[in-house]
Length: 130
Image (cartoon, rainbow, N blue to C red):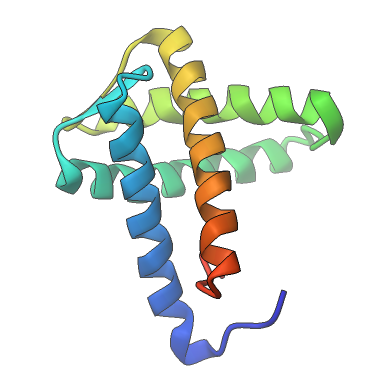
């Protein structure tokens, strides 16, 4: 992956946030364990999930939780993502997660849709990560 020029980093962050908001809004529209009250709430949800996810990852790394690969790593990431969704639900009035099962389903759906959309955007030459 090529390096992004410093002057374009903010643009990439905005694009990534809009893409994440679209994914969250889509998952909500499909009733996959998560609901948001419109695109504005999905946009704020994307920002909060990014912040909460970063804090959770930092805390897990600080206490020495390993980041394994393979199936174990996948299961660990899905569970962590579900917990991040549930934590975000507590601080966002425009977002509702429908229990732990709903959080798992939403985390899987967000992951799959983000992955497919990321492949598509990368093939078009649009960076979605810094």
